[in-house]
Amino acid sequence: MVTRRHVVTRQDAMVNPHRPRIAAASTEYARDLAICHIESWREAYRGLVPDHVLAAFDVDRRAARWAALIASIDESAAADRTAHTIVLALDDTRAPGDRVLGFAHAGPPRDEPRVADRELYALYVRADRYGTGIAQELLRAILLPDTDTALWVFEENPRARNFYRKFGFAADEARRIEPFSLASELRMIARRPITGRR
Image (cartoon, rainbow, N blue to C red; front, side):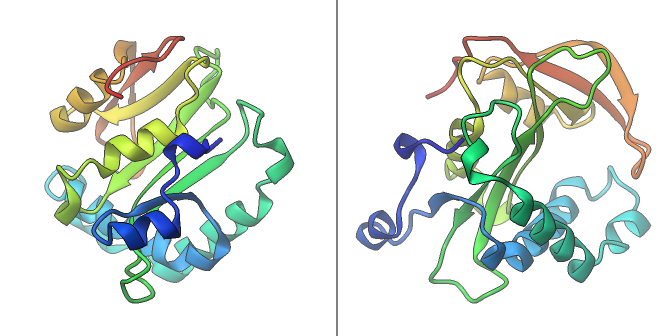
């Protein structure tokens, strides 16, 4: 659920044109989201994920998947803590295809046995926007403070692990091999109430 406190509107963005707006995803931005997703993976994981895996991502297929998922989200279920939620960091002054600067996606937990009520599946920001606060805004927008949340992060990605620790996430004993990259991942969990950098 994206609360008004965390949403940057078009009007806000006009007042401060360098500040992206944080908004719930719509199908209008599905291709931009796919491009951001693929490029963020390539920027963040070059050297960690095999080059042939990074090169294999297809924008059209990824855009179709995002469009279908966004279209399936029921607005009336926004209060459901297990519902899929996708939020985007948008700059509408940029050309189509380049308007999504980052995104976050959360929803029902996939782990069995269940260790949290919700899972953060993805949080990505374009490399040229690292350090601008966009990742913090996206995470604040998508986290539910009264809901335990789990995520998986590459073990060899200390930057991401340190970032999540600031929001109250801590690693547990779980490890797994990510199927596409064959890299090791560890699980982190934030217990309610979720605090951290605000």
